[in-house]
Image (cartoon, rainbow, N blue to C red; front, side, top):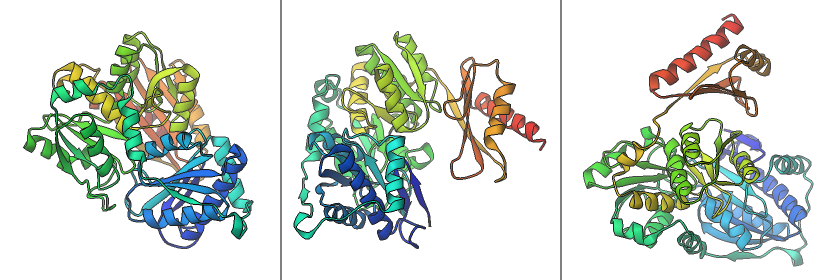
Length: 461
């Protein structure tokens, strides 16, 4: 069993001993700490709570809601929902924060408490550390019986989210409807199975073939939207003669596409394509994390904008976007952050912008993909001994390549013209993760192998 306490939330496997898994007592402890922090920070006695469809969702929801009520906090329970929907609901409700009950792309035995501030954005590192400290010290008190919080059930937020998307300036419903797209969707039997069909209907998409849209939490495959997990989607796109396939993760903040020929569009290129469309209509800057494809930089600079890289993690990307007034940003894992909507990864916003882009492009999705620079990312890792000083090791690699453009804001990223390699240490294991990108799989793998060889030479292995 696993329990991971981090600045962005509490994640773990359901069951096991207290402190060893995400047990009911652990849920109460960390919900109490968050509730106490949120009221102190915002001065508002209201929290929005929503969940994805995983099996443990209802159980965790009831504990979280009851705990917040026990603190004297009113709870707006929006039920089966998505991460971006809760993010939108928090400011609309003028709440002090929000909790999303989802372990994102993790398998069904996992669940988590994702924590939002009063802006509907993920809590900062400083706030996350304060919440963990409150939990460790049990620095919270529960309300007297006459001061218990109220539970308000509100099932209107799916429609509110969709209406919000339809109102975005760059979403063109008429163009999408006119394109008469035939679409296959894979919603991995979570809340996307409700939200994505409803959005497509509102966008005027009349032909939608559904795969795994029963929100029962029985994930039919690994829920991370990677090519190896989308075999059924690719096959169905071909079988149905569809124009494209759409896949989302369980909490609908990651998005990827399958082309009409059954090949994946590539999760790295979700953000690239959406950014291309936004930049064609609204010149400006972009941001992604250091491990995301260079193609976003190429597209941005071609449009006359400036690209900036942030440390890995949504909150870091959002902070850099605000700092640079970026008009679009996100992460190469299929996460699109569109500030004209809100500062959070939102697959539903991504779908609407992408379909508008494809409709106006007027050709196939595979043809659209060929208009972008072709890069390949290789993902590797090297396992070290627990006593190894990884920071010292990275400094030696940095010294070796000091003449190359490089960044140390998140591990070590070294650039070689249009190729790069990014080394990040794991926070939980004696591992260095090595991401590399080149214009072919061979180039990317060779670059990774060169860096691995350098590390072994430094270690005298």
